Length: 201
Length: 78
Picture (tube, one colour):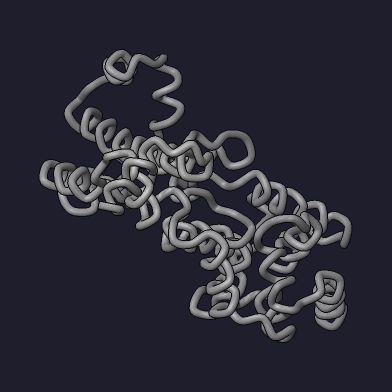
């Protein structure tokens, strides 16, 4: 299925991985797919999805801020709240961090956490796409649905617009949640994508 | 003094919110330490079997969790 992806749609998938890493999240979720589609700096943002989203008034900066307010920088990395919680049971996180960094170098304790093997959909690409990391079940669902959207529209390729339609169809991920928060209607966005496709056809 | 009392109270807190938050923090710390130590063991040539034995888990479990992450070596692609 991945071979049907256009270059831009592939860039969205790769961009999502990059977004996830930048935010130090341990999964690639629907929110990272959305960010990748929006990012004008990347090839991934240059597709129909990016154009439709921007036309609807969605900006990468706003979406990024909303995502961060939901999950912060790295849901599994150790933050101040963790340090406080550990202090309450008698563990000095700073002392632990110092010891570990003495032995293994700066930032050793903040490396990306263990990733479980991703299997199935992208598992077979694991080596080449190591960076593909584990996609969240919802993100995988979105990519599957993007194929279905393409089939439904009788398109042979899967473009960024199909990934966006898949995201909207899946409907429950953080991606859609932050879109809704930013004041965009899912149905309206879907309609805009279809119109854009009609105009292009 | 009140601070010491607060601390002592927190350590044995019966408030689930406080206690469970500590468990969560501890788990995050555990995961981070495990990542560091497993990477180090691999870098030093330990087999998955050796690591699994040290952690008292199955070889499959440790492999499933940690294999595929690039070992931090200069030659490895990012």
